[in-house]
Amino acid sequence: MPTIAKNLKKNTAGKKAAKNGSPKTSAKASKTNTNGFRSGTYIVPRGHVSIAVPTFWTLRQTNDDLQVESEASETTVVVTAYQRSEQVKSLDARDYLKHFLETAPVAGRVQRGESSKQKASARYRDEEGDNWFVLFISNGKTLLLATCHSNRPLTSREGKTGVAVLDSITLKTRA
Image 1 (tube, rainbow, N blue to C red):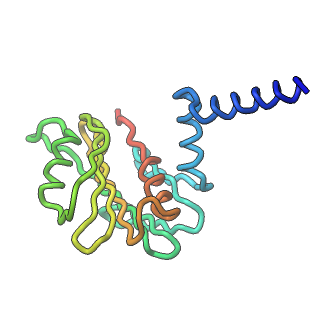
Image 2 (image 1 turned 60 degrees about the horizontal axis):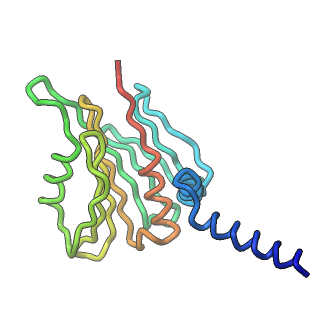
């Protein structure tokens, strides 16, 4: 009988440890949950921007941007790149996010995410009830504006996949 009690204690302790977990463990778990889809990675011809494209989502490249759209067309991720000109100082993601939010049709409260010179993000809902996740990524010379627009909540499966696409975007420093 004591053996069973020990096993129950171990299992309960193991569940608590798994639930609370160390930051390293929980980061891996959230990454697995967020990026639960199997995707291909698209790298732009110059090789300094990459984006994951979920299975059954459509990738479209125009002259100005990359568009990744869900199968049901209810969630769209658009990535647009801007280059610094000689007259402009180094591109700061925080400045561009601030300006973007001042001009965006925001209804309700804006939820700001991380904010640094290299990366700044925010979530909001517009006047029509659509959900937006905006991400600016900069390496000083190039600035990426990435938006995830969804008719569904960003907590839905399709919304989470759209946000995971945003999280997958990388901008390498060009030599």
